[in-house]
Image 1 (cartoon, rainbow, N blue to C red):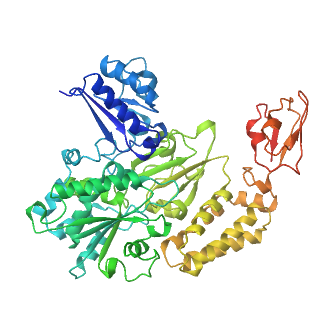
Image 2: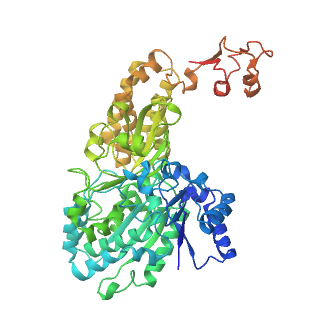
Image 3: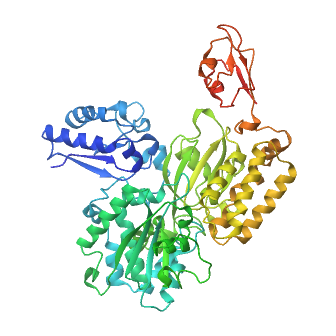
Length: 596
C-alpha cells in the first residue's frame, strides 16, 4: 500500500536546477531502503513558484520543500519518509503554521490561495508522460462526450456561449473562429496550435505542454470534430526541448490508446496530430506567418482577408488557437458554458495565466480569474518588490504591449481595460519594474527586440521600427530635443497604421505607453541631459564624496583603474578613464560614490 507520494517538479526551471538528479537519487534511496511498495515518486510539470525551485512535495502531508539540492535528499528520505518528521529547514516558509509543527495546504499560501488554476489544473499534479494519470483526472472524457453525444454545431455553440476568447493576443472569441471554419465548405480543413511563444519573459504555453500535454491534444481533437477536420499541427519552437519531448510522447500514447487516429471511440471521426518545429522567429507567432512556416516556406505574414478560417494552411480552411486557449476546452465541455461564464468579468470570461518576472519576489507562473487587479498579482501573489524598492511599472503583452504605471496598480485586468490604458493582454507575459528602472531604456529594449525580429516584408515595420529605435538612441545619449519626441510619436502612429501584420502594428506600443505615462523621464533625458534612474550610461557620471574612508575596495574593483588613492585617504576618480560601469557604486559599503 502506498503511504507517501513524492512529487518532483520536472519543468524547465526546476530541471535547470538538477531536479532530474534529485528524482533519480530519491528513487535509488527508495530501493535501498526497501520502500518501493510504500513510496511512489511522480515527475510533474511546473508548480508555478519558479523562484523557489527545484520543488519537491510530499503527500499526504503536503510538505512543500523548496530550493531542494541533491545533498538534501538523504535527509528528506531518512527524516520525513522513514521517521515521519518533516524537514522544516527545507519548507517553503509560509507552509509552517504559526506556533505549531503542522504543514498547511499549498492552497493556503499567499502565492496559491488567490489563484484559480484551470489551464494549469494538472500542472504539478500528474506525470505528464503517463496518459493513465491524465485519464484518471477525467482526461479524454470531453472528447468521448462530443463524439458520442453532441453534434459539431452543438460543440461550437457551447464554446461560443462560454465566452472563451483567444489567450494568445487580441482575445478574438474562440467559438466565432470555429464557427467561421465550420461554415466554409471543403473536404480538407486543418486545426493548428500556436506554441511558438516568443515574448521575452513568457513561458505560459511551454509550462502547459510540459505539465499537461494531453489537455491540448484532446482539445485539438474536439476542435477537429467541431469544424470537420481530420488533421492537426502543433507549431512549437525548437528551443522548448522538454515540451517537444513530452508532447511527442503524449501523441504516441494517445495513438496507442486509440484516442488519435482512425475511428476514435468507435465513431467515424478520425484525427491525427503532427509536430512542426519553429526556428525561433518571433514573427512566426503571427497566425499567417506560422502557417507559411508549417508549409515549409520562410515565415512571413500574408495580407488578410482572406482570413485563415476561409483560406489558411495549404490554402484550406484553418483554425489556429494557442496552447492556453486549448487547455480550457475540455473543462468547458465537461462542466458547461455557464460554469466558465461565471468566472471573470462581463466581457472577459474565465482565467488568465501570467508568467510573472522582473523585479518581483515570487517569479513564476500565475493563473487568476479575469478581473483580478494588478496589485493582487504583484503584491499578494507575487510577494511584492524585493529589497524594499517601490513598484514603478509593469509591462504586459511583451514587445506588443505597453507599460502600466503605478497609478493603474488597482486596474482590473481584462482585455478591454488593458487596451484602454495603452497596453494589451497578449499571451500573458508580465514584467515588473521597480524605481531603479529607466522607462526610456525599457522602451528601447523592447523596440530593439522588434527591430531584430521584423521579418522585413513590409516597409513600415522593416524601416519604421529601425528609425524609431535610432530616435530613441538619440534620447538615451542626450542628443535629442523635444522635437525628437514629437517626431517619435508621429512615427509610432505611422507604423501602427501601415504595417502589414499585428506584430508590426503593435511594435510602437512600448514607446507610446512610456511617452504617455513617463513623459517626465523623456524630458529629463532631452532637456536636462540626465537619466533619473541612472541607467543610460551616456547621461550618468560618477564621483567620490567626502564619505570615502579610503578602504580601497572601489579602486580594487574598478576594471579600468580609473580610481586611485591611498589607504584611509579619500580616493579620486578619473572621469576620462571611467567607463561608467557602476562597479564602484555597487560595491561601496560606505555609500561614498555619487551617481547622477
